[in-house]
Image (cartoon, rainbow, N blue to C red; front, side, top):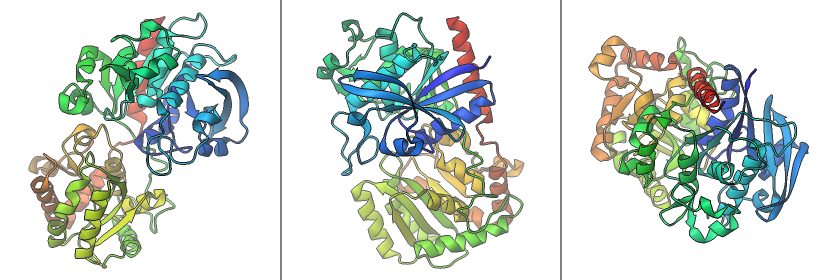
Length: 485
């Protein structure tokens, strides 16, 4: 008999995406199916999700879900089972899932995602006939209140369900003033350090960390980092108390979606044995970004323009990068000051720096297929996916030594180069001198074609699929269900 798992997430490809969480939540069901795990994904009923599933099949209704009517719809998307919480008062809004069209967080995000958690807990504990689950897997703060309702206000009299909480980024915690507690419809006992209270308010992510049977992060290094103040964001003490109930599992990527041999977004498809075909993609990328045609190294970035991602250092190193014969193509959006500094840098170097503000999925594929080097200078990075896409497409990653970046990239040091194991470049400290030195190393290696191609091929032939990670999640599920038996 397969295990039946309810995955609770605020986004998942191909239905809705703002970041890496969506890629992970979207890929897990297929990866776990190979391990004998049947996963059903629960999502909020955003307009894009509703449009994708159509009418769906009505499975349940709530006359009042924290004060608003809602219904549960079932559908299949790409062969995967999906449940959608259709609650127009909470989710039928323009803008992205968390912010309005001006970029401001919705004032009632606490109520929206508490209601989402309440619904998930009801479903997991038997409120919907013909739906039965052995375990619940929640993702990030938006789904974390599921566990508060499961533990403190479960539906009916069914026994406790084992639960996994995955942290994709500790920086986003869902902390709210204590005044909201009375509207959460939780019993008074939930207002405690062992419940939802943290730092005098209600902590959504904290609740999940506190109440989950197992906490996972998206890389082993990040699992070790978040017990330290600089990475734990105020919750490092709680993480430390969970001990061996905190595990790190590196994300995989969808190797069907991200495959340079078949990717329809590319001008020219290629494999590790036909790297010369990448040049057509490089020429197309130069044309798109208005860059001068050159055989020098083309650096790319696909990123949020934030301090976390180290994007503030990029304007500082532009002169060094260009002075070393490189050029930069950047796709991203974010901090206005970083945007302004990048525009100023592009004005200083016409034809050498190309900028595309916003996000374009097809363009991100084209950049991986045509760029020579992808810069990922994050100050902290739970796992990261862009460096994995870079590996798959022969776009050599230059990464800071943190979180999943250090777990997934093998630095091109003399020993790794001699053994043929190198897949990229790592550097310590996100500041001008460290990144400039890493860029210089990349240029030096690029100027040695045989060495460079070996690094590309080693990266492309690495196993960055979900197979291993899926097996690790399945093992955790089985451990917890056996403990709960």
